[in-house]
Image 1 (cartoon, rainbow, N blue to C red):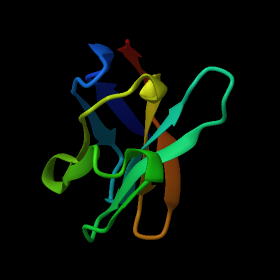
Image 2: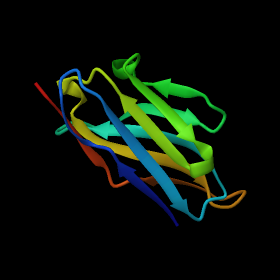
Image 3: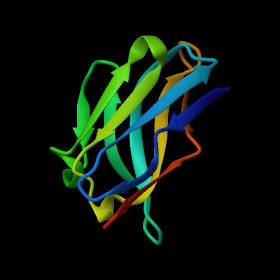
Image 4: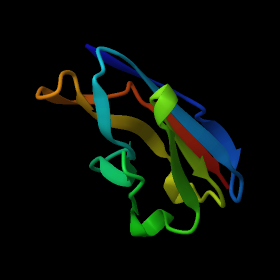
Length: 120
């Protein structure tokens, strides 16, 4: 199995910054896509940003220009640098990874989530 361990969440004031990290470990042949999703109270989980192994990135419109996703493929780790945070960024942030466990066996995995709270 594969474990995703997130860190870096917390409480920050409007306009502040946080950096989330997510490290994957376990039975990993290779990792295709790694990304971040978030879920606010009473809302559905939504995509924040994703990064492919080839370096392509994609962002939700609401975070473009403020958030940056990056990866360290050697460490199987993905980061989310969040700047200019707004109250509407408050949510539980989940790491997601598309992992090849073998050369042909592909699975999606989720982290346990980390709370980000932006106070005004």
